[in-house]
Image 1 (tube, rainbow, N blue to C red):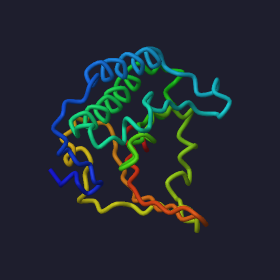
Image 2: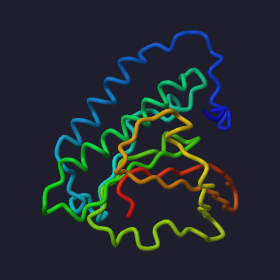
Image 3: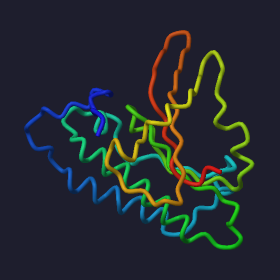
Length: 181
């Protein structure tokens, strides 16, 4: 496993984090309830459906949060992608389902359902002055680095994201896990 300190996910805090088990169960229940049935991408008004993590940003970014919990969040997203794939009806065959895992900004991670493959036309091509996505080296693998379980029929693409605006600059990684072709 590659050092997780690449993103300064320090876990030297020894005090137990209160409510961690409860929050994980709430996350699982919330995401499971919302995705018990296939979400309808046309109902959102955006033309696609997405679900952000139901946590306070300060909680996800806390140095007290163990990496084990971050790993579990990623695994929950992958598991829901797999579940949603398994319940697609014939009428939903063109739906594309994926999870976006954003590092180090795990708070920005989400589940997404697109109505059809055409939404991906040019989607991964981000090369403007304000936002660039550079494909990560093929040797990088989020699944191995974080010791996650991922079904073999799910694709993974990783990008280094650079956002450079007048008064803001950030670098991170976006990992797309799901039906990407």
